[in-house]
Amino acid sequence: MKLKNLFAAFAAGAMIFSLAGCSGNTSSESSSSAGESSSAPAAEDSSSAAEDSTAAAGGILKVGVKDAVIGFGYKDPLSGEYEGMEIELAKKIADSLGYDDVEFTTVTAATRTELLDSGDLDCVLATFTITEERKKSWDFSTPYYTDAVTVLVEKADGITDLSGLVGKKVGVSTGSTSAYAMVKAMSEKGLLGDYTLPETSADFDISSFNVEGTTFEQFGDYPAISNAMTAGTVDAFCVDKSILATYKSDDRDYITDTFSPQEYGVATKKDSPLSSKIDELIKGWLEDGTIDGLITEFGLN
Image 1 (cartoon, rainbow, N blue to C red):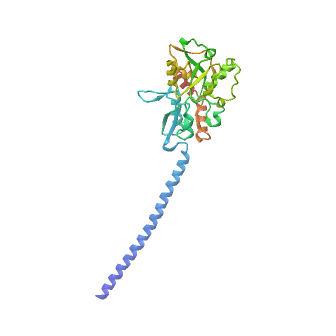
Image 2 (image 1 turned 60 degrees about the vertical axis):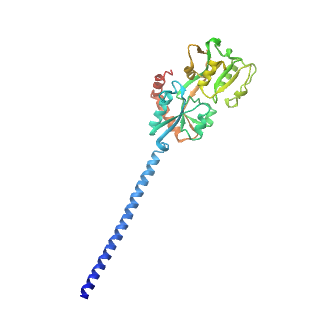
Image 3 (image 1 turned 90 degrees about the vertical axis):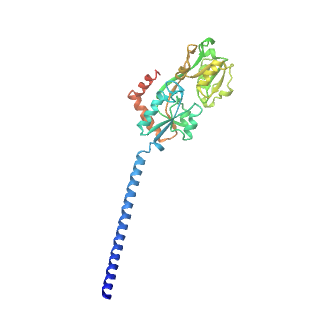
């Protein structure tokens, strides 16, 4: 009886030892397998992230656009939807670079660079004129549209050219180069006496300019300038002709002078990885007629 019990105890001990050994092997294999499965996806994720580095966080391209320039960037007050050539270009850029979506933010001439510098925007398509001075601070694509500056006036005032603006107050957008362009054109025509024009728009002090009684008033957006002209607080509205087209009416007309060709480009932060990619896209769409098609579609010929 004692021998039988001893044998049973020995057998039980052997079984426990065997199970313990199996358990140890299983744990080791599981740990090894888990290590392989966790390291493989990590490598894939890293590779995928590198390939998709052009797409910003969240896969959304953040674009600054105008909301009151018909044909370029206009926000429908009823639907809240943006439309225009620059809106369509932004959508095409986002799609071509692999972004999931595009987010539009309304900008003005005064706010577009601040939002670009702060990182709130990835790029700006907002009738943004390329100048040598601006290229020092931001990157620009190849121009996708060329316009010229002119002046809109009330027909009843009888102003037909630049000479009629001597002694008048002209409305311009804050942060734009329109006032400098107009003063340069007037100066070249000898309409401003012995006034010496600064070499660049950056050196031009618009707020203190008062030559031959000609002055400027700055406004935050284009509708405000149009309203001021209607109210008679300014005599004229100076900006790119394609922008003025929105505010032209039966009672208003352009002066005969146009000046200072304006080339619009896509602006990005200086040395942004997006800069060269967007420039390549714009060049391609200029060559294959895509941009010409958009210009025609939105009546900007």
